Image (tube, rainbow, N blue to C red; front, side, top):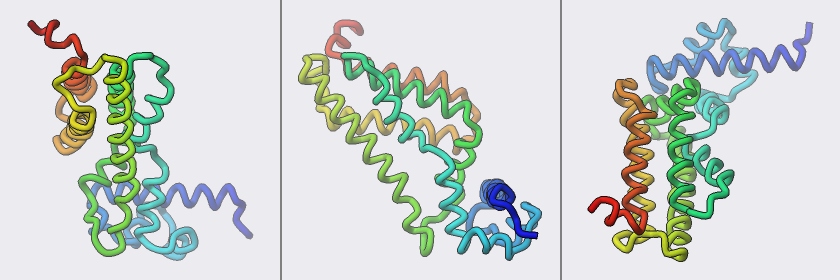
Length: 210
């Protein structure tokens, strides 16, 4: 009996679910297609019906989530505050908060950042993450230039430098949280770091601290 589209889709998702857990547990390079098939309860043939090879499975797993950087960019686009620094602050905090609650996103980002070596067939697979990083950096820079044009940015900061530092704060706290096996409160500490950084961007920050 021929499988329905729904059954085929269900099998495909079960393969991705199994591969995601296997990659998270053993790492991408140490996980075989046989292990994925066994965990998913399917044959190797079923895997090859849906995916050309392990890199194709890896790509499909990544395609099921939105990167935190992409989520943050979308959050900025939804914020209509006239103060660009307020937009960056609220958007970064909101993005971190959502990441802290999204276990699927956490699993996939752990695989991307800690469980895969980007060599050979996997060397091109980091491109989407780099593009997301570069887009976030460009957006932060443009927002801080707007803040400067509205006389809101502290003279101590160049927009490019401020954007780079904020990217490091957001990316650094996410990586440290995953690398430390989530042994601190990401939402609480991340929010404090972001608020501290954006406070330094504000033109009146030195008066507030004096």
